[in-house]
Amino acid sequence: MARPMKRLALTLAATYMLRSWPDISVLQGTAFSSCSRVVRSQQADSTKLAAGVPTSLDDINSFEVGRRALIAASAPALLSMTHTQPATAAAADVAAARQKFDACSAQIDDLLKKFDAIAASIQVRDGGGDKIVNMLRGPQSPCDKFDKNVLPLVLEAQDSDAFQSALDEFVEDAELAYNGAYNANFAGGSGNPKNNSPQAFLAKSKASTKEMRVKLDKMKKALGS
Image (tube, rainbow, N blue to C red):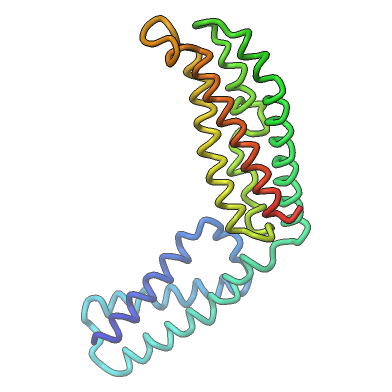
């Protein structure tokens, strides 16, 4: 019974996949109907197998036929999820991602131009660091949720690995830039003023923002443009 039980495990895994797939609405038409019928049959057979009920070769063969039918029925349905998306929709996703990529790049360039002026105007505990925070991650910033916004570009890049690597580093740099600007709001008042001052934290934020620009250039190169 070891082999039938292994088949049972595979079937239960396929059943779970079909029942829990987040885009199950995509599985429509004949392919989905076939999958549903086979799954129901397989669930009945697998329940008997798990309980140790089937002892005859016919029961095991029936289970095996059903397992093969499940694979045959699910294949076109699963393929439809990856190959029938309208080309225009996929192209639109990539275009939107590229637009957000370019908008964030322009935002970082603008921030770097203004950074020193903003930093010079910030006084202890005046909330001035928020001016930089909002440019980096505010609700109106094109750099907010950047990693999610540009996700469609990963597979579009000529060098996907290089793009993903630079994106990961960009996210780390963005976090450091954000923390530096945010902490500038609360710096001063105690400790070494060279280390605990708005200007000290903003200097770290600016350095990380420059690194963000470097990572954007790496991603652009990986895109092939």
